[in-house]
Image (tube, rainbow, N blue to C red; front, top):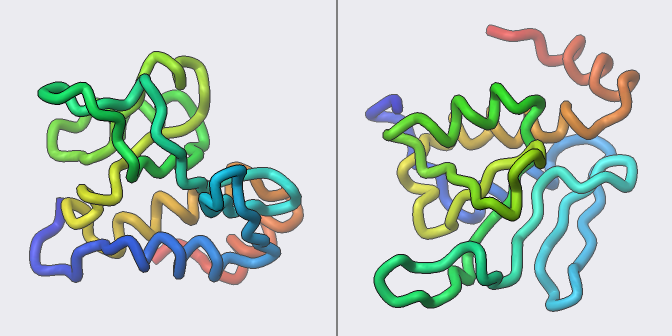
Length: 140
C-alpha cells in the first residue's frame, strides 16, 4: 500500500463506479446499490449474509461490497496480500469477485480503489466498450 496518498472512502466507491461509461445503478431488493454495465453487475453492496460475520460476535457484516475481478489470479493476489482489506468467503469460491467492508476502505488509497473498480468495469463491459475506454485511458 502506498502511503501519503488520499485514503479511499465510501463515497469514492459510488463516484468511481458511477463515473465509468455506460453505467446504470439499480437498487437491490433492500435498496442496496448495484452498479452495472450492459446489464452486468461489476460493483454491488451486499445485504448482510451468514457467510460474512464478525468472528468475535457472529454478527453479520452490514457493509460488504462485492467487486468483480478479471480473473482468479487477480482475486488471489488481492485476498492473499496480508496488507489488503479484500477477502472472500466460501460462498464466493469460483466466483470472479472480491469482498471488502466499507469500514476498511481507508486501508486503500483512492488510487488503489479506483484501479480495482476500473478493472471490475473492464471485466464486465463489452469488448468494444472496454477497448474504447482503454484507448482513451492508456496506462501511465
